[in-house]
Length: 241
Image 1 (cartoon, one colour):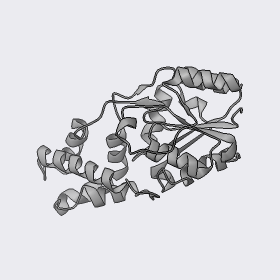
Image 2 (cartoon, helix red, strand yellow; image 1 turned 30 degrees about the vertical axis):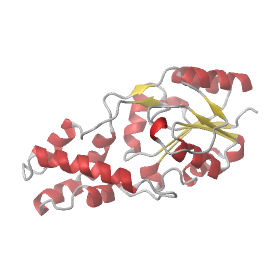
Image 3 (tube, one colour; image 1 turned 60 degrees about the vertical axis):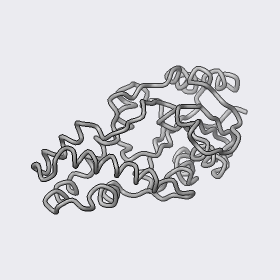
């Protein structure tokens, strides 16, 4: 059945990057200068790396709300820091969150521009539905990659206040599009987050595009379709158009 709209995850579907084991050096240096050397670069790096792991463990809830950017820093990074370091970081939480979320090595997955163009030519609206610390960073990357123009709606967890697999993420997108989720497709790469979210939201077709994260996720629902990359998704769209 032709979809009324197609909703896509960002990381693992539209774009991806190798796993990041430690905090980006540029962010460490930015914070070091911001707090005027109150902590060493090594101390900042450890706080960011340990905080990222703690944040990842926290967000593995079943129906999670999302923390604000300020709350993420307050809860997972700043405890134990001297006040002279905490105060300037609090004031720069939005910009620092953007830098933390941004990846210099993001790359579009193969065939994604072609799939989006095929959907646009068929007048099928497109939306992004993604968990992230900074939706602004994702928007800027999509614009830089010249595909942001394809999306009528972009829903990000830091702005929505909820995270997948909470179905409100998908409902926010379909509400903005003025469509029913039962008429839309959702494409994600993680069974426990994306496919569960799609099933809870009542999506017409839940599509899995495997990424390196797919194999480390606990088992989730069976997808309606599995596509290897954007070219396979393009072929699936073309069949219904």
